[in-house]
Image 1 (cartoon, one colour):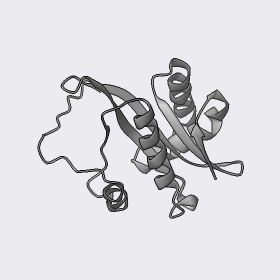
Image 2 (spheres, helix red, strand yellow):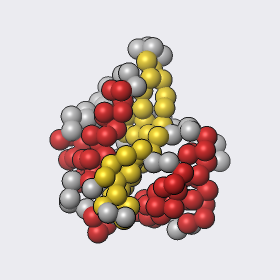
Image 3 (tube, one colour):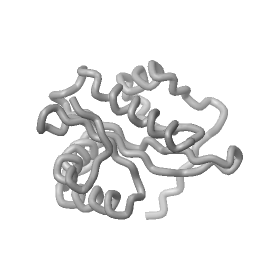
Image 4 (cartoon, helix red, strand yellow):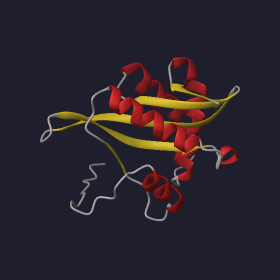
Length: 147
């Protein structure tokens, strides 16, 4: 298996995984919109996408968005998306992606990586604990929907 930072050459494979990821989170399938969204991220370089390929098959990806900590005066990364294709699960692919994200965060001098997951996503929570992610118990997180 090969893990690397995605480029425009990976658009088709990553956008298919991204569409499946959105369907997993109960969104309607929309392959064209998923492809357009990933194309924009790659063209604008406003996210970093890591992908895992097994031979010529795309089996997983994670997407990091840059943000900053004003208090620490350092970059942080938001791990917003992590997905492994159903048929490729339980092969350590999510761990490869988490390790790649951590390595990248360290290379870029980041303070931390932040993520969130559904409260009922127990397998992901166990994986995050295993990789030393700590669930925040000090701060409430709020969201304002402006749509």
